[in-house]
Length: 233
Image (cartoon, rainbow, N blue to C red):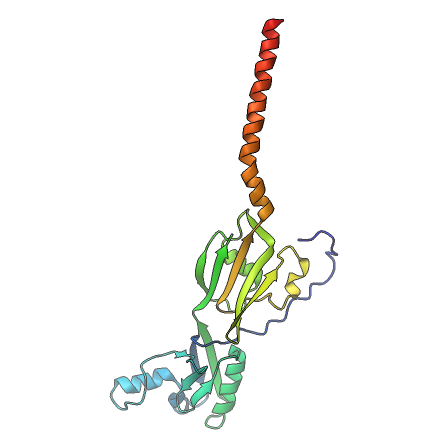
């Protein structure tokens, strides 16, 4: 981290707004409430059980919701519900408001499955990993990637994020004390982190073997001349 800073100053951490849901995201959604019988038509597990008993043929056996290409989920009784672009909390509030027409004080519990993060470049672990901590910051993410290796340029970490169908590339400086104030401090599902190499370090690494040989040969020549002078005298 930068040395020219006031370590006694308060850190204003970036506000966490939640993951923005995208097409293809998978969600576990459960509706609870005071009336256990009334909530049954709004839960996939209940409908799936009814379907397996042959009492009705209208339900799917899938116990989770996948956001379709239109950005929607097909919710029991309510039908098609827009989910893309919402955070989990926003979708929860939206569903609870819709369910209030049918239920008394409904509670919706949503868990996002298969959170993914990809590491490229100078990380000790490369490739795609899954994680469960929805509120994960950039430093925790890098730890998940095994940290960066000695060739990484910590001032040039690229974050690639899909926003409304378009990939955006943001450069992050991990040596900056104020990174916790960045709007990109928190990871989003399907983010890509790319650690670029430090060119100066690479150049020095390539020069080091040559310099080592030169110094070695110089030392040997010096030793030979010293021995020659000693014998001659």
